[in-house]
Length: 305
Image: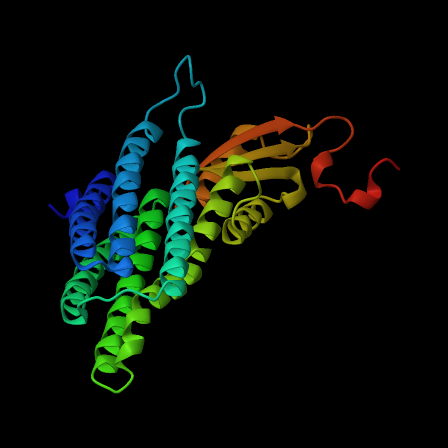
């Protein structure tokens, strides 16, 4: 049973189930109360649901071997799904921001803050449960898709907590002589929350696009690869490294007269990188007569000399 809940597909399905409940509740409650903030929360959960279903399908495809149409497999689907997820969440944030600005300049929105407080309190508890579950999975088995879900639910939990605090402030304001200002609480919260949280999917999208463009992997992975190469008597300049989905791709250039065989070098790297959260894929080639440093890694000032 414990292994079942640790599986990537199970984690994504649990996330999708929570998102479905919150999407239906948020959109329904938001329309009934006329609250832009609760509608934003529901719309965010609906997008989360659709993207979680997309992530489940991508997770299944990534594990499939290559075929005639896709000889290198489906590893690129993982960063592609994360990029789509980031772009979709950014669009929700930007559209909600625009709607809130319009409501603010047209006199605010009058809502029942007591009912709004009840909804957001339930929402905070539910989001927190899903977030803790995904954190439990990540500590034991880290995957990019589950990590993206965790980031998404972190945003949703913080969003719900901020909304709860905002509605509590609006409820308190209604009990004072400044009760007329309470109608602005709902759009102001949407503006603040959507404006702040748009940065998280932006970073998520940039990271995924870097993978699709085969950019250098995160710094911590580069440090691990450099340490493994040094242990084998090799220089970092002899390797080109990138991360694509669940794989760490390493192309290594070894001198023809290197004291260790290519097979031994490959095995040594696999053994030293076995503890990484990604699966290493190592290709070792014999260096040309010009040397064993990749031209793309030489400093610009030394080119064309």
